[in-house]
Length: 339
Image (cartoon, rainbow, N blue to C red; front, side, top):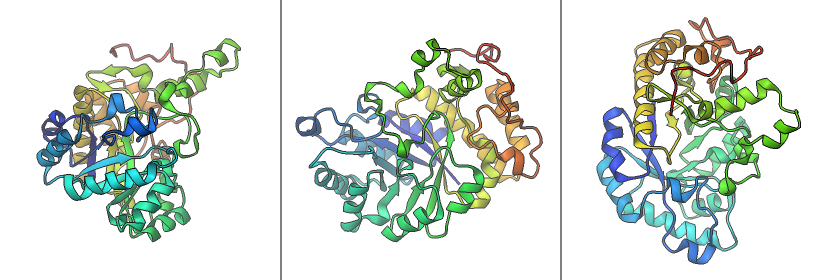
């Protein structure tokens, strides 16, 4: 399995390689896009916060990363009329002239248009395309794409059932949960992540305490860090099971994050992957992660787990209690965390 690291600048490539990254992804808006399509985003993330500076910096990223592959997102869930031909042209430029390895695509019209151009083998299907079962996987395989990125909320059993032969599979490993299933979510982050904002519901007394706590953990425990590591969703204890399933790539989320956060996340993933490759089980991996990141109560009760079912199904997994009981954010703030 490979660690897929996010990028926002060519200055981040070498530090992340040194921490253990095996491949990279980033975003870039086509030059002149706003002149025609205004504020419509090309990607799922805000381009002002997450894009690389421009084509020349992307060329430098590809050069610095070589021979490790670089992937570029064109993964907004929808586009304005007339945008797809422009994006197909831009995508071919990135593949043929800039030298990226693949495009990450979500929207079906764009995906089909790129496949019709013979670019299927250089396409990754975004998690926003919601491949959640073997039938959907077979459809994407029939298009000739090379990789499918599975959604955040899939269980290990669902991943196992969906990961049919003939495709590479990528899963979420660290950071940045989402309340909803992105592929069927009609909200937009252009006005801020209001799916995380429950002020109206809270005032009416309709928020369950456990639900509030769960949303807080998805938001990296209120955007906290501990010992320099993000206290966010984490799938590292499931690496042995994911390896047996045949997962190829472990995604570290956060293109818009600081280099310090990116480096810490890649470092943590690399340590966990090294343990998994040497035969460690979930308990040993968790102990190693906690020794670095701290906040043992969040791991002990599986509050940060992308794949909490690892504790119910994995040999050598003994201690994950998934029930939230009566926990609240105020009673379980990890006291040493900050910033």
